[in-house]
Amino acid sequence: MKGDPRKPRGGRRRKDESSFNPSGLGPSGRSLRPYTVGVTASLTRTITEEDVQAFARLTGDTNPLHLDDAFARTTQLGRRVAHGFLAAGLISAVLGTQLPGPGAIYLEQRLRFLKPVFPGDTVTAQVEVTGYQPEKGIVTLNTDCFNQRREQVLGGEAVLLVA
Amino acid sequence: MKGDPRKPRGGRRRKDESSFNPSGLGPSGRSLRPYTVGVTASLTRTITEEDVQAFARLTGDTNPLHLDDAFARTTQLGRRVAHGFLAAGLISAVLGTQLPGPGAIYLEQRLRFLKPVFPGDTVTAQVEVTGYQPEKGIVTLNTDCFNQRREQVLGGEAVLLVA
Image (cartoon, rainbow over all chains, first blue to last red; front, side, top):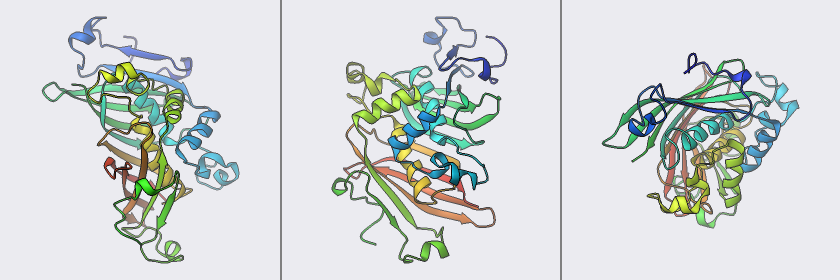
C-alpha cells in the first residue's frame, strides 16, 4: 500500500478510478479475514453539471441553490453547489460494489456535510472498516469524502448487514 | 390538517404530490414562526425502474442487488431493490424545496434503512421540525419515509443551517 490511505490522491486520479487496499493481506486476504479493522476501499468521480441536473430530475430536489445561478449568488456560498447526496451516493457506490460489496444490506448511514461540493469537483469517497461483529453479521465503517484539493467535504459512518 | 400527519395517504396520492402543513398557523404563519416544532412537509414519488438505472449510472453504484435479477434472487430479499439513497433523495428534496426550503444548508443527515424499497414502490418522504435554535440558525427535523402500504422504510434526523 502506497502512502497514507486517508489522503486520497484526488487530483491525479482519472474519473471513476477505484482502489481496494486489503491492508497487506494479499489477494486471498479478503476472503480469509474479510472485515479486518483498517481495511479501506475508495472510488473517485468528477461530479459534473449534468450530474447535478440529473439528480434534480431524479429526486425532485430542485432547490435553486443547486440550479439557479442568480439565486445562488445571493447565498453565503456565492455560487451553485452540487446536491450533498451526490457525494453521498459515491459512498453508497463504494459500499455496494467494493467493501463490503454486492449483497451487503444497508442498515444505517450518518452524513456530516463539512464543505460544499461544486459542479466540476472531483470527489473521492473512502470507506474504512471500524468494526465487525461476526455473530451478528454487522460491519461498521467510517465513510469520508474528499475533494481534489484534499479537503474533507463529507464525514460519516455506515452500518451494514453482511450475514 | 386532516388526520395524523405521521400516516401518509400513500396509495391515493398521485406521483410527486407534495404537501405543506403549517400546523394551523395559517398562510402567514410560516413567515412569523417559520420553524415551529411539529410543523411538517412531505413529498410523494414513485421510484421507477428507470430511476434505479439512472441512479446507478449517476453514482456508479452498480451493486447487482439493484440491477441483476438472477443475483437478487439469491439474496435474502429475493428480488431487486431500489438504492436506499433514492428514497433518501426524496428527504433531501423536501428539505431543499419546502421545509426549511431554498437556501437552507445541509449540516447532517442520519438515515436508518428499515425496510427495502422495491422498484415501482411509491414513497412518501415526511419531515417534521423537532427543534430550532434561532441564535445559531439551526433547525433539526425528523425525516421519515413510508411506502404505499404505509410501512416505514426509512427513519432519520436532519440538521440544517437556515441563518
